[in-house]
Image 1 (tube, rainbow, N blue to C red):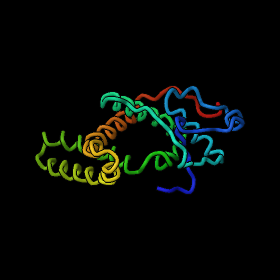
Image 2: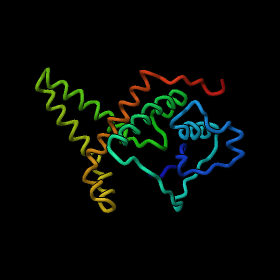
Image 3: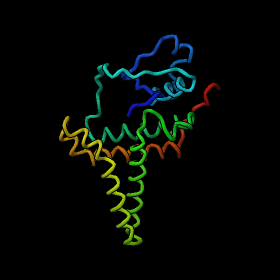
Image 4: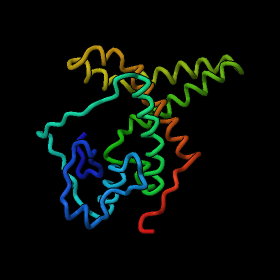
Length: 187
């Protein structure tokens, strides 16, 4: 999705002007994770322009197992809650987090609640089926994009994307319940 302005650059694929980093105190070392998101949002809020260069080539190491992937996403969810505390306007939308990912996190939470509700009323099974159907529809674009590139990933996408949504959601919830000790910007 093409955006007029972006407010985030992953550091594994970013270059910054030295004078910009120095003038803005560089990375905030209170953030032990998502420090790149905090820096990007801070620079964007101060009017700096970030530019995406699609011709740039980046190699990136990914988690090599589903548990490692889930742990990484849980940690990202936790620290995302901390970043949003500092930049609450980024909760609704930023150029990093696709809206469909937020929907999927909500759908996973609803599916867990509906599954638990089956113990109370069988009508919860209908809600669970509806939520799972919406979730599956939400992953169709990803699956279609992945299919020509990597068929096993496309076939595993329902499981991978539900694991991602659950881990991010639980991490974010944990970040709300147990916030990190972070000073407000400028204090």
